[in-house]
Length: 357
Length: 161
Image (cartoon, rainbow over all chains, first blue to last red; front, side, top):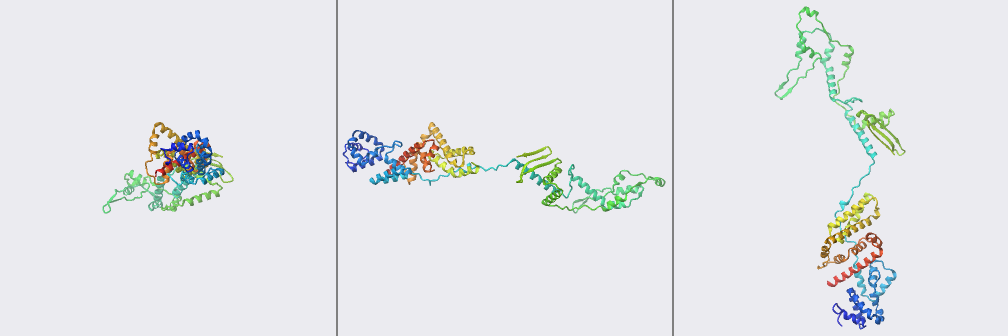
């Protein structure tokens, strides 16, 4: 008999139904049916007609079991057992049943091996390139009172830095804005007051009649036009220290008086008392070199002084900020045991911030 | 789920979800879109989804998005064109994995999905059921039938070789 294939399988089915096949031929038919499961339907049609007559033979070879299908999966019993083995869901009873079948027909081991190959390998990796787009930035949640604390700290730092820059210049008390031009004028006046010429005028105070000589003196002291230095091509501006009354005298030239009129002429008296004289004598020239105090030292000294006066740190800061801003600043807070503010109220002028837990 | 945990989920599972979708639809751009959509949905639900359930949530979302996409493409006729190309096997195989990938393509979408969730992700039948919306017994049936198809394909290819 020819080997079973798609062209002659019907003859094999017929021989099988008539019980004309040997055991080896039945096995060959079984393998063929596994390769072409769609043909089982046709065999079942033969079987339905003649199988009962050959039931004993089929049962002996386990062929009937192979043809029966699982209700749930629609697979044959053998297929079900093998797949359950691969899936790891096989029971002990089913495992024993499979082992018995394999023992009967060792070629089933090969088939079982193919089922094991259907498992997909977990080692197969596919990298998702857009992973970085999916990452979310971690955002820290900051309570609003932390912003307030940060703002207060920034105000303290600004205050300390402002003080460090101005401590050796002029510290304007509350209500007075800092005016650098005025300070410079004061410096100039001080310089002119202590100049030698002025001291001489002050010490030689006596009654002096106004004469043309006085006018002449005033004219000579009037500023001369700047002289161009050809070598350096720089203008040299003569520095002239003028007596306070010079301008007045120059603007009002006096008429020449005769001797008699001179005797009766009113005398302009420049007087100075001893107090002023002494003050002028004791005036020390201004320091031209300024000494800067480090920020930390200044802040420490300031806080120490205020602590000694019984003020709290917050009061010190509030006072200094008030000096800067000309606003009324108040800060009240209650403390908990852990040192955290339970509640506080900060007001700067019209702005007020408060928090209650 | 915190932001930190969410980012950890991205690191752990984005590759897996991408593989799961890509193997199913065989379109890299669409697979990327589905993965991104799934993570966007996870991020939107980050406060509700626990870290331990994030993987399951991701696969469920990705699977349903993919099914919607497949249905939409089928209506538009795109799927047939893709299928025609992917189902041709006039080539020489160099390894089992290559054969298996082609065999995978022969499965229905649902069979393919359950097998991949089972083999790649190691899910139990019940977990696969939650992701795909199937009962436990349905999952089992789909997997068993899929194994049979895969095995027959391997046998047929071996016979050809």
